[in-house]
Image 1 (cartoon, rainbow, N blue to C red):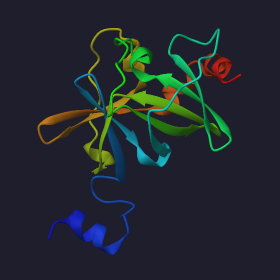
Image 2: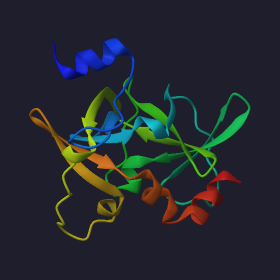
Image 3: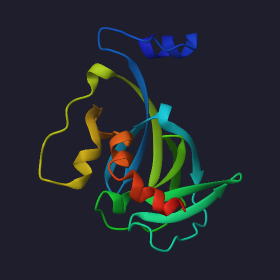
Length: 169
């Protein structure tokens, strides 16, 4: 029986091992790339619904949605990463995260899966180019045949938190 199966059966995650803390990530797709977010930052995942535009907001702010009485700003993650805008499909999702007490929605092409990895298995991201999206990368993880780009949401939303707040008004 694998270590992960034993952990799941016990219903507990070990805090530390030789490889560091065990972490849980949700993966999602943007174009042909797979990205990961630490599940501790995720509130929920929603199917795409109508988003009300906000005049004067940043180009990556799609608008706002009403989530059980709370106004949530939704960003187009593709535009935030300087990628072409996406076409909405049945797979399109809004990942609701919490940052500094505010809920923010991230529009993504599709949500894939949740997986576990140890902190020590995260590799440093290569420094290639001067792409704005590189600022948001915590590291990378080679998951079987697929490279998962792990995002640092704190950096992603702290860089211009004031500009994002404009979209929430």
